Length: 292
Image (cartoon, rainbow, N blue to C red; front, side, top):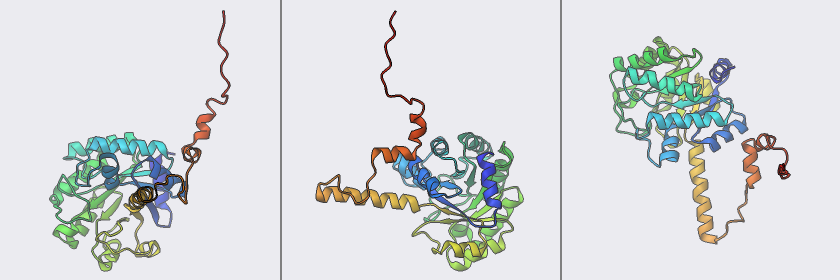
């Protein structure tokens, strides 16, 4: 079973698919160990962790694909990757899909912002014309070599040209073959609940803590009719908070060995299957030198 097929099987089950956002191999492994059926490679987290840059469209397709490849190699669960705008026109979109498929990702989401884009929960965004967006989604659908590879059509039109246009774009994207629709940043509970009612296909909700959309219990998100939820910044925010807290502790106490929760090097290595690697060289005994 391919990862893409595995993702489709999870989507076919009668429950909300929760995909926490991961930004590197360490955070991806935490998602897998926790038992989630999929993870989301967040563009915001990728830009921050790999480049030290804000999510302003500064990460290139190559840099994003490299991160998707590293994460996909580190875990067995399907990886849904942020593919931004496809990095150009229909030709670029075709190459983008091919590269993400080769990376091992199980699917991507593609948005309709003008490139360079911005985080969907920031102001000052612009979107391309609907017809241009739909051509790019159609190109993505046609480009995939694995028919199970999941295409999520994301629209940021709500904040730019209005909710009705966002719904129209989501439906048009589904009509040309997208598998799921993501209306980014519903601004209130009414919009959030209306999306699955008005979009004639499975819907994804992108959750950012402190973003434009009201935070709701995931059971409520499921009852609204959403098929998938991306927890984009939960892991990233937790990591940054933990990093800052640890550094402050060291600075204030000059202690590096008295944290309440500690990981030994062996604990860390075991998260990444060190036993399997140890088995490749089962003996630590020195090898006798050959003599003539």
